[in-house]
Length: 292
Image 1 (cartoon, rainbow, N blue to C red):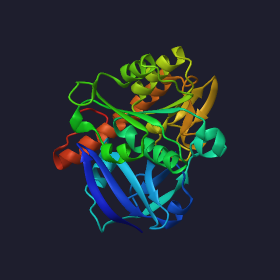
Image 2 (tube, rainbow, N blue to C red; image 1 turned 90 degrees about the horizontal axis):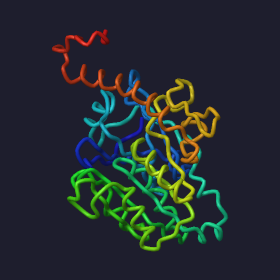
Image 3 (cartoon, rainbow, N blue to C red; image 1 turned 120 degrees about the vertical axis):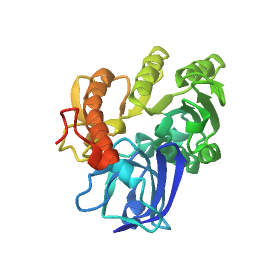
Image 4 (cartoon, one colour; image 1 turned 180 degrees about the vertical axis):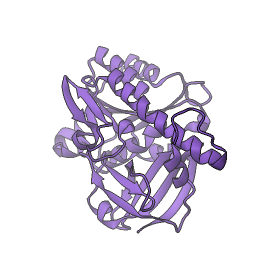
């Protein structure tokens, strides 16, 4: 059993938990993920490791309610426990494999959208520990949906907040802020973009024009997390890849986002039906024709 040591609500439908998992904490690196299972009948849920403390033997996970399983998970409290946690899984960020001097010479821009702020944070924090100050753009629809702003402020070289509705920070999409920074004379060697699929797609369309190499994390399409279900099948530069075993990070300019989003929509529909059945309980009549 893996005890939950702390739990908090970050914003609407987004939660953070600190879990006792010493073996994972001892080995994990930024960019990797783990799989949690609440009980013997629970669904396997892949989640990016948002933070870790090797001394305390803990890992932090952040998740958003998207289906029945994550809705049940949000009801867990401090002192409860997960039946199983497997990890660390996936390949670490390629930044962790760079030579120290090469890394310090890099000018790095991170772009985080919504809950994608969670997997961006450990990379920016790790870079600061190596003496590298990265610029970070964090975008959300409104101010109320921003997460981890104080934590990101503490580790970023420069933090740029943008909201779609202009309610906080800069106004507009993250792509507008990228354009603004370049217009202001900022130069970058690499961009790492993590967030909703549509956001990553348009960031990559822009950075391709700017000739700015871009890495994206395809964790939003992972389901099983072991390569067995095939849900995270991708076309990357004409080759078939699986986000959970070959990634989750890939060259964003090589990813076929349209194909990936079509596959994602299939599984999202199933999650929505399961969530509705859980919420309605015995009153759920299955009128959609797709429920048992």
